[in-house]
Length: 100
Length: 477
Image 1 (tube, rainbow over the protein chains, first blue to last red):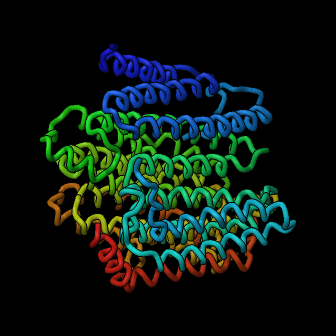
Image 2 (image 1 turned 60 degrees about the horizontal axis):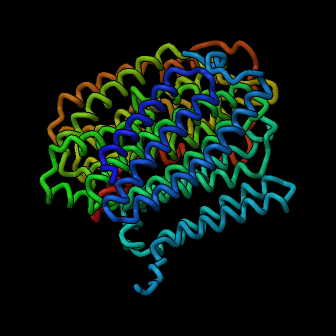
């Protein structure tokens, strides 16, 4: 059987990749995918905890997270389209209407 | 096979009624052509929820997942008040901005429903769901003026950083769940005490992750980067809404999670929150000095106010919590009041959101200038306004908890803040008007201004009623 630590390491690594991607990439879509990666890292750790603790709460929370992430994707993409119509870009460096 | 038992629905009644009415408002959008009807419908819904709220028994239901107590009741009153005032100031403004769509009102109701769930959450799953319902609705509201690039940009930044913060919150939840095997706040606290985990690194890590995620929600430095852009670009009525509601909801969950679930590691989390509070007050007040856009200035001011309110949480006592609640209620009045004046200056073809637009306002519109004067005095914290009383109670509770030096720091920053608030007053009263400014005054806006100005002065003169209500509310915490 795969030990719990392996799952937790995988989850941490995926989460860190997500954080790194969010902080370094400049394309909104890639940044958004990085956030999704972070959420899925959390899902991995929750499911593995849930399995090792023999408790259902973790699974329930994972289902909620997947649902909310879907809603978040819908809203995020809608916002990107609204932005793209006014300014043909998906690059954060060009979002400079407001400063200070 | 365990038998299915219907949970007690009486404590959740306000949320159930709110859900139904928000859905009714959404459907009513198809039927009614005049969107003002929806505004009235949403105010009527909130009034109905208000009456249901006072008939709700103080109980815990859904196996401890949902708590109806005095604490949540007080916060829900702030949220309902926030909706009424926001809807009143939005009606004319949406027409001027040419975005008079009905879904605006149902989104506000859904966001408020999320906040109400957050205030009552006794379990991290409910907390997360409430937070996301609030956040997702607010993202759309921030980008509501779809043809305006500033609004798009505000929504985009708010969305990206909000989603980033909720991923941190979830990571914290998963850590604490893995350690304790539960997501119930009381059970987490018991587990930490029973097993002597007060110095456990996983508890510390998850506490820090919670602190990061909640700091994003209340816009505390160094997690405030989204706030100035989101507040400046969003429609002004939405800025008023999101500078009060989500912030109060953030404090509601901050208080409950840190004082209950992490109650046994109070020394550790206050060591995390104290630097955050000092930075928040410092950056908020100092950067506000150099702003030329009034909405952006008020965004930094709202960051600074989150710093003051954090002192009450750091105090960690019932008195501290009561003073935070009292402060957030007062903040709702004075901040929405200030935004109501800003909205009044927005007319067809005139933005009215730079500070120089206020030059000589006292000559052309003495009443509007006088109201703005009251709100600016209150935000500075000058007696006899409510802002002074709110700050006084927070600082007193921090002094009693032994954080006198922190209060000294807060008072110094509060004195700095007088410069940028009173600059608006100086512009209004001591400069000559450059161009004639016309006001978009409507009865609804007048009602909102009357409520907020009266509340600011009455609470400032007679604070005891609100304070004793807040104290009674935390008694059963």
